[in-house]
Image (cartoon, rainbow, N blue to C red; front, side, top):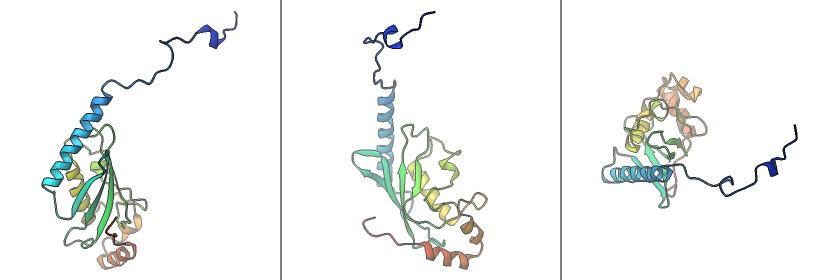
Length: 181
């Protein structure tokens, strides 16, 4: 059997040359994501879901990256603390959850040193029926009611039941946000 030279056996033609092809529906999918995010932004602006919560696109040109602030709820050890957060929306949003993280240091049982969050609605319990508002309210609630059964920060989880010791450790880690953050 004769050896086949791959460069001459299959000559390049217009049909066989590689092309950049957009997946069917990709453009409409991006438009649907943008439409959904615009709608959610308007809802947040018209009626914030709770005091101390805000989020919005970082720039007018990219609706898929939002920044926000989250204040600790009244009556919790986080009262008076404000944290910077970020939300990245995948191209499959709302079918897939946004990636949410704390951008400022947050000493908490369900937040690791890099700001990653362990919250079921951001993982296996996500539903397209959920929204940015739901996520923000859930995060604020998580601050005062952690899931110590699934900690990312074991030290914080172990201290949680000793309120005074927890407050002391929290104070060591908390850094107030600057006005421009």
